[in-house]
Length: 499
Ligand code: 5AD
Ligand code: SF4
Picture 1 (spheres, rainbow, N blue to C red):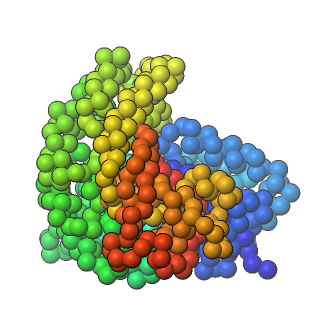
Picture 2: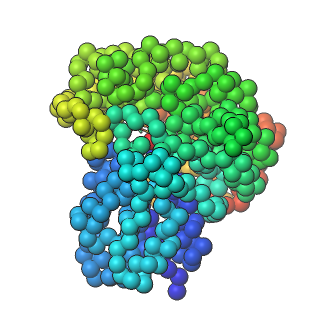
Picture 3: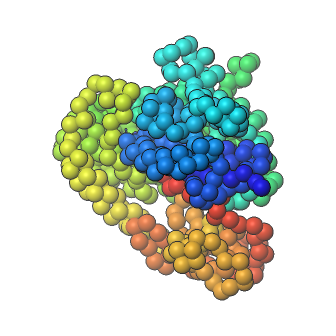
């Protein structure tokens, strides 16, 4: 009988990718995925530490499994990722039934750790060094970029994939735990990335999203001193046969260089979409956050993006209720959101993270009620801006990569695309500017690029009708059927910005 694996993933796209790779590696060892934790021989949680709430959710999930694990001591329970790296042995104090604690930089060891638990029945820890614990080079070595062979059947969709181009972060924004749990910034060799993209495209992948905490800081230095930046990398992978779209997330405002913007403008496969978190519109707050720019710099950067890449869509992240954020500072953030024309913004209430500079230096002095209210107010402003942006698109015909059934359709079908040749369904996809478009069409359009005329808009979604597929010049409904499509990949697709 095959062994069963359950994995639950929270957090950013980097975690989604890590889980996909972990599942691929364990499948090669004979594991099969199950969607029921209590059914599994190995239960894994791939965790996030960016906000307290994400950690609380994992500790309660672990708590719910305590009795189950007592009844089935041979089952293996593992905590992976950022929380593992941050809380280390402490996880075993809080949840002594956990068998494996494995940090983000040690995931390659997971199969070996599982085997060790099964043989010895003793907890296994695999952690990278703390940043202050050793020299930079030693700490770097302890954070290994996890890039094993990819398994196409493990991706949430066969025609879209994440590709890691760097790990870690060196920015040390004062609120952020990422530099400690994901280690020093290290860029992967361009040849490795290009080979991975070639392999993915050869397997039918049409869209890759390059991942990095500050993806536009990507820089690989060869032994002879030559350097390759993100703009060079985009050029290098651009002509990969079969590849249609390239995205990259998340950008750091200070590193939004002109050569990168020119690459976005001139390389037709690169999406005209930039996620560049501002975090705040108030200089005092930005200074306390140590974001290394002023709001004036950020506004100029936005203007530069729009001038160099006509039609570009820009999205942002904001933290409300950061230490010392007054009503006046918050209003400056509101002004920025009113004026900047973001496609959308992800808004978070500040959550103090032990081990960060902000937690050490500043009081978390904005009451929860005020954080909530500011969150709602900012969201309402952003929604008005998004709606106005969406309404301007009514009447346009846009190119959409069809991703799958719409949320409404998925609910109606119990989460699975139907197998038979049923009638039109409500489908969802994205434009080159990352706008979500919902329209009616046959399921066999999934994975295809179609032309959709926009007819209606809400703050979150554009609605339209398929015109024709101009790329291959046939009626959209007569396109060939996609060979395989499964929404039941490794995990849920999380629509969160990368951190
Ligand atoms: N509290 C709240 N939000 C945070 N983020 C990062 N750290 C924190 C924190 N301590 C947000 C930032 C980042 C996004 C992914 O998460 O806005 O861009
Ligand atoms: Fe790095 Fe982004 Fe965290 Fe700042 S917010 S420390 S840039 S991961």
